[in-house]
Image (cartoon, rainbow over all chains, first blue to last red; front, side):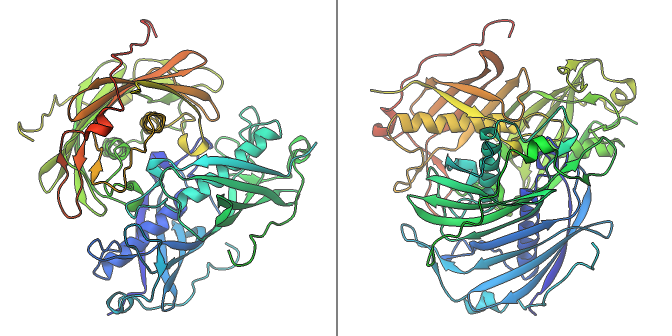
Length: 145
Length: 145
Length: 145
Length: 145
């Protein structure tokens, strides 16, 4: 049965903070990618198919940051497959701490062949991988957050 | 005289790559932030005013990735102040290698007070800092790239 | 009751790998620090006592790398307090995957006061924190590994 | 002519700091590696010989930290080839800011073959690469620093 979403729990680690005392914003993108890889494992595979010449570079990423995270904060990434095309997957992500929305973002990946010495080339997703995922539609943080 | 833009040259370092052989996408955001901090130094100040209770958290960040960067690639971040409001600055950024557009993105920061033990609170930029920057308008990578 | 050791389980995340296909060596130090912070939480406190002017900079760190870790590998950090002095704690760490030793290292931290605008200054550990830990002696990976 | 040493200049970037306000210790190892890669470029090659099945995993790394680095600090990595064997290179590194020793460390790398699907295997350095480097002996920070 195809998967559409996952809730991924995480704790802030120290090197993820910066001298302003809060989590450096680039780590929010890492958190989403960790959740994505957990979603693929939930679907039964690794996103890194080492034995195949298929890869998943990111074509777009965006985030809106509402509230800061701090060292040792525990939070959740609510990740959904928002859209699926023949070549791409777009995830939406909402980060919550104690239920409160900390940040919300989006990540789009594209299926490519990667052959040594050749440039990456976009291809249709192999059927066995495409069948693992199903779009769940958008998720919107409640108004006012 | 206020500043509006900077070209920041950089070389890809090894830990910025990942097991797919290319730069991990989160580093594109780090490159833009490095360029931003170089822009502030060009304006004569550090973005980190340690003696003042003013900070600049990021409220939004987005990127479109066109072509991958690899270990030891030399590239440039073309950073512009795209928009300035009383509380925020929005930068646009285009990454180029040998003239070719590799990625293009946007970063919005907001001025806050940061007092120990209190939540961050958005404020109007202090006049001396606001006067350092002038919006240069949008930059758009040429069509087709 | 004072704590002496912890076993910290972890999975390799993608940005921790590099273009050679294995975990970048600097992340082994991060894994040990994560285990250290888990040990402090096990002792009932955060290592980051925000309300006090006490900090724990690292004075020495070393690692021997035996075998590479790869994306999604699951491993354990076996962390012990190897030595305790009035001002310092030294941890020894062994990383194991499926029982096999992947790497072994050491980390020494020192207690300092950190007052804004002043240089860090080594001090005797506050009694309440010193009492949380007890040295467990050295751990040595079995010969031949 | 073989190379033995390099002085590599660097500025601290913001994500390299942590919530204690100073550079996270793992970045000192990254700085040394950046200097190493600059040394290889000075010798006329990239350490990442993509067209060959040769790699250079790290077998040991250690550092003693004397003084903290902070955001935007400018410093130098003084890197020397301290020892050369048939299979390994050991570098010594001293980090200085305004002449003052901030940290001193050591990094040992080993030459391996890396063939897809096979474990890494230590080999004698290819002659053309071995000839690029010459040991310069140890460097010791002056006593008292």
